[in-house]
Image (cartoon, rainbow, N blue to C red):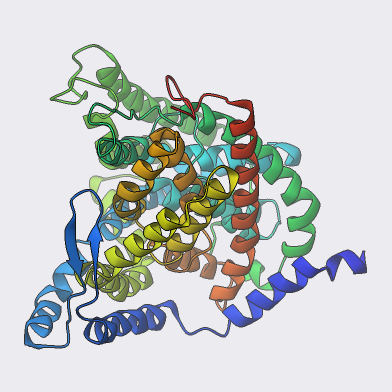
Length: 507
């Protein structure tokens, strides 16, 4: 046992944790990167690249001049307020916070305590991976729920938090349903494919068969790895957890009144969601796309965050009125205000993160980095497995620095998709290779937009939790996802399986 616990991987994970915990607060890290981009924009000013497809020259813009200073000062506040993850997180946490304080979410968590331990881990993987149906909202909702689930069972809640986080963030390429991400990436891939074939179309279902298989394969591999390796070595109950500011209602059984209220709230909330879905499903439904009259894309998918907001509000209101935790309308407002207090640290951290992201984009440094890396693949002239793995690795590497999947693909696709097309591979296959590399390391990189909020959730249970604690554990899962999916694409390729409806690997 001692030998296994002191193995190479265990020691490496320990080293990452020790080094990572010595890093400064995430606020200072992003502030440093923001300032570094500003300085490098002046040093590297004039360096350019040609954007594939449009043949447009992209040149690094210097911010170390009067015009650059004007842009920085004029846009600092705007960059912060218009940063999409800020509004997404606050809106979702406002509604989810109300549902939690009204007692609905704790009631659900108490019912989950009856699920056998052997089913808990696979359930977390499946639910986490499918949560991207609600876009990035799943990355915000799932981790705190899994942390509370572990806490209720006297298991390491930070490990539970991380497990939910990697399932939702790194599991972005797996799903049982078609999500908004599939629509977005398919549009970019179609545009890039038309560089080689003007009539080519890529549909949102392009990778659907692979996505479905991934849910089950990754769940099986992840469950075995978690039970056999990760939990015995990395999940420890710290005495400090006893003092965590977590509602102890999680640990007590539901009363008859609470059980009845939960059922009523669940029926009301899911009834609303079903209505929204039916208004999308019926031909000519009001929540279909107003132009294409389609389900994918549709108003339903684009409006998932507001729909989920109403979902949680209905659930919290019905439950709270029945058990007495919500007596008047102002109670709902007060609960939402309380939930926003817990988001203070996240809001502060978002200031340098948002400005770093927009500054990196405005200077064209992000674009040129993506173009240059894509060009390396083009001139390397790899074929077969070597090329496939190269695309995955490049996507993985770029994802460590740029968290927006659509932004990266918008610059990589115009080179990689036509290149692969001329080598005889379909755009759908190229898109899948990118998605694997892009998705796997989402939970590992501290530059991922939602990484700071995970730190905030972890601090609920342990105040001095560091960046290294999170990174050291997400690293092994990112590696696990990457290896598993790489093995899957090789099997898929050699068997010649379709990626989705009408989407083969070869042209």
